[in-house]
Amino acid sequence: MTRRRLIAAASALVVGACAAGPDYAPPALPSASAGAFVSASSPALQPGAAIESDWWRLFNDATLDGLIQDAMAHNRDVRAAAARLARARAALREVKVDRLPQADAGASATRGRDSGTSDASTSFDAGLSVAYELDLFGRVSRSVEAARGDVGAAEADAQAVRVAIVAETARAYADAASAAERLAVAGEIVRLLDQSLRLTQRRVEIGLNSRLDTARIATLRNQRQAEIPAIAAERANALFRLAMLTGRAPAELPHAAGARTTSLTVDRPIPVGDGAQLLARRPDVRAAERRLAAATARIGIATAELYPRISLGGSLGASAASISNLLSNPIGFLLGPLISWSFTDHRRARARVAGAEAGAEEALAEFDGAVLRSLQETETALSSYANVLRQREALRSARDEAKIAAGIVRAQQREGQVDSLALLDAERSFAETQAGLASINGEVATRQIELFRALGGGWSK
Image (cartoon, rainbow, N blue to C red; front, side, top):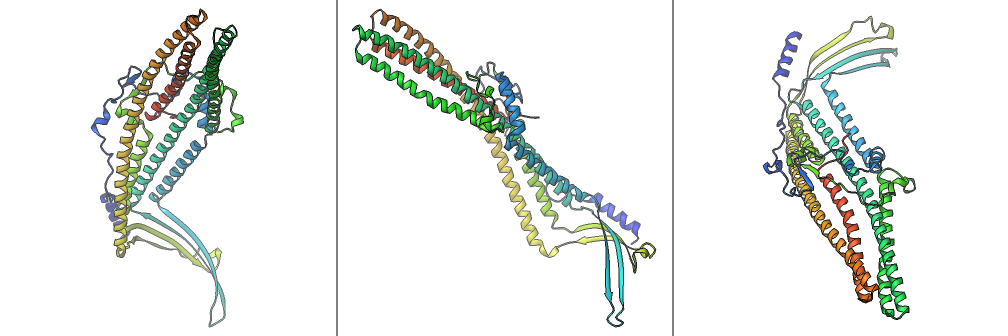
């Protein structure tokens, strides 16, 4: 066969070749997942409206904005995820090299002695070889496809880390602010109880109350005072966590990070989109889908090993007794197809195909699980947020009523209409509702952040 016919035949084989293994198609999603969320009927939610990627700006807090910027720049987990993505991209570039002709150049010098004549001689050799795999059965193309799937999964994993770090940073800041609000409320309750205690002590001095009355109020006052150190510890722990998330030592956290004394809150309906938007946005779902694509491509890689590898190869070479004669001596060449086929090892190859198929089944199950988990987490977060808002409204009403009642009882006690026990009950009710409202304000912020995280909102730059 002439060289021209050989090249023409190889070209025909390339055109007619097809990649081994199944072609990837994105898996079907549950039909119910595309609609509105079951738990999105609260007036505090805005179904259908797309969530903003920088959702934390809805809190309208410049300090929080700056802390999240710091976390994205300095957090160790974010940096590690970026490194894993860079490694996956490097692996893709390496696999793509197999699409190109591979060239090797070499030179050698040998010195030997003839056993018969004892004459020593030196020879020099130089050569260049080129080989190009025709990829008739798609081994190379499937390898590139699998590497692209790995890159897509690594990109989604990196996004998932960013989403988590944004949410954890906002959560730590919200916890510190909530603890500061609870500290202020606890201090105010102690101050009010101190006033009641002083008033009761004066009434004891003039014989209008007994020592038991002051003991009861003092007990309540000391109980509330004892809660303050635990709340202060919660605030400090939240600030330490915030320092770690932003890549700082605790002593390096700026003062502004702990300056807020009221709980975070979003005062407008939260956009939540729908199921279709959720599944397109959640990075864990995207990562699972890309891993499924990579696993499907690896079936083709394993299947291609059942068939021979065919390459077009050529080499040029020359030999001479001295380096100066290498270029002047005749140059030899070889050109032809190179075939490599381990046809005696089909059992091992078929086992690899079976393993790759099982890997794809596993990836499909994990994708289905990621879809269901994202829907479950979002519905749970929506329900929890709607219920905590109702709880806050009830506590607000209770706090307002308890405040009115305590004021009335104080006036009645000053006029001698009620005893100190009635005042104690009123003060206790007001203290409990005030402290409960401060705690629920922090819980609302926590539920909002959990909802944003479940919806897949987070840093996208």
